[in-house]
Image (cartoon, rainbow, N blue to C red; front, side, top):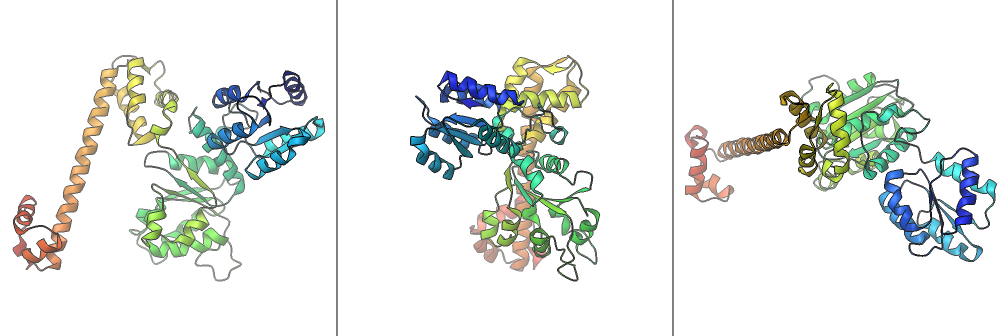
Length: 422
């Protein structure tokens, strides 16, 4: 995208760039550029520094907020070179003085395009790496740009995001775009490592399987403390914990996911700060579905096609309900709702009444599951408390900060006899 309020210069730059094969979009003002940017999603932007209305500084600031990985090149007159230099210190990719040299223009644009890979499948490069990530939103396009760069960097990656937001799908896409794509991608849930019975570390077993490829550790915050210590040298220097010497490196890439920021876990001592910094050389944040609602229609179409629902669809009223829903379960929940709706609908177009009912039923199940979990926690807490106090109800009530009458009611609700703990 080229932005300039001088029609002659705009046409000249377009001509120079199209002559060597670039697709060029021209905007005559900063406002026009901002209006068209989300739909066109250019890989690089050239903008004049001095323009009426939104000038180059303001345009860069807005673009850098919504798409910080898109390189911005500024055009500046000789008198404004200090301003342009200051802009590069704030993150502008480069600046060119007017009148510009054609070779310098082409060289700078080539450098910008080289660090700004295409991700939407419209260009000549293979876009199969992100085939399972369906989106049309600016926030996802920016995330995919970052992911594509991460794939080339071959360093550890930490992906954060709520449950059901498709973090593993993004991790697999990064692997598919990397030099390791023909090697194994091994995924393990960190909460399961503690339950694996073996004479050796579960991580050591996984490393031999993932050799040359990638090891994904899902919900890294659940990784036991001992395994965190074993993982650290591998993430830092690709040295497995069991290596007899420090030259025994292992060609493997670690990708981790977390369902919540690790700051609190680090403060509580449940997660190693040094491991977080080693993993966090590349940090990617998967947005909740409620933050990318414009993706819901394309996701619905994708899930229908994946379910072999040719000729099927959802009514406009049903789509409106889907776009307004809260989606606490994110993309996974949307996929489940669509699959259920297709199975239950007797018409080609899924009606709004069915979608509304499925959402209400799922919401009811979530509430029931929460109540069940709360009851289970309460029972375990009371039982453990009575074990600790040897069945002394008065002592247990004081620890729980409840009066004796209320505490007895809690015990009766769970059919717990304190006499069994004396």
